[in-house]
Image 1 (cartoon, rainbow, N blue to C red):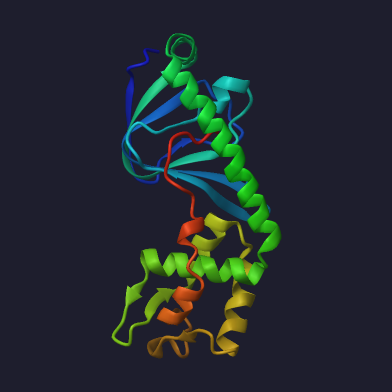
Image 2 (image 1 turned 30 degrees about the horizontal axis):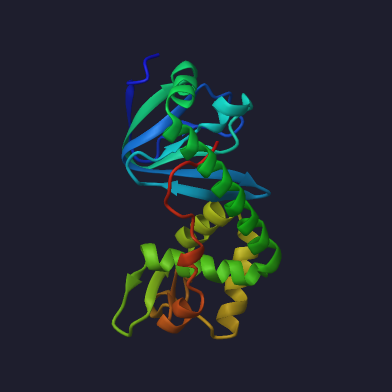
Length: 221
């Protein structure tokens, strides 16, 4: 395969799966890609690659081990495919590229340590609340009183697939928050309980945008 091979992926398309043998690195030309890893009862997003010329999938070429994460096109994207011989040539012949790889590996170690610290130090209910705030900021509907309306099922699925929190824990946390009047069901969902309203105060208190997967070069897998 030539290093200049370009592939176009549609939104939701799986580029590679965790556990597969990898023989390609990918350079993002357009679009965005999520890198997800399986956890006990869900998936967690390790990183979002959305800057042109960022790359991912290089670890499979460095250590010849199976993919450590699943890559999914978050939206339509164009990728440059780099095979092992081309990758090795780039490392040997391009000092700037080799240095970039070293910096990426160093940053990944730091990020992994931060993620482990957050998992250890953050209580499950706090992680869920932060996930709710994240989802509402990205996908919620602002309503007249300043709150944000979210669909319970969609939000729960998003938290499970992005933070790896089991569905039953999410359901229990929402029940406790509603009981404590931290959040409320939308007026139209008093019986069906399909939608929640998260106040602006709730969103401010649980805003974890600074802890989201950062944009930047390299993503392993």
